[in-house]
Image 1 (spheres, helix red, strand yellow):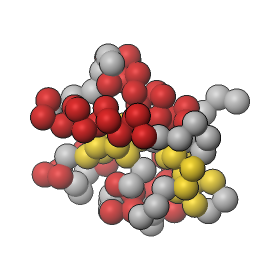
Image 2: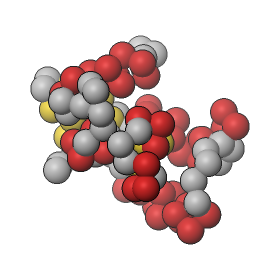
Image 3: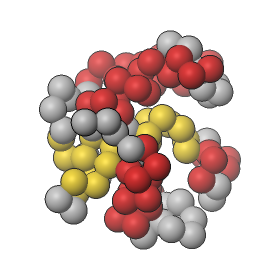
Image 4: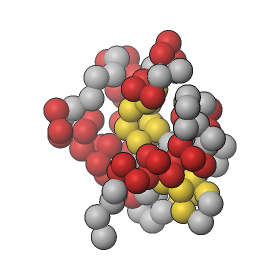
Length: 103
């Protein structure tokens, strides 16, 4: 089954009550965000979660896609070099099966 990133984004925004502006719950669905621009959706990078059975859940395919982007896939991602190691280490910890994201 192919992951629909746009549909996942919509579900995450609704679950987080962040349809107008990002918040801490919305942030939990992403590996990295720009704290200086936290009120803009474009500040949130590398989404790895979806809402499954009403719970924010890390999705293995999304984790793999984010890891690939960190390696340059899809043109890479523009994050500060000081954050790259932390972001890469996050991918190593992610599950092989969907797993609820704890807040």
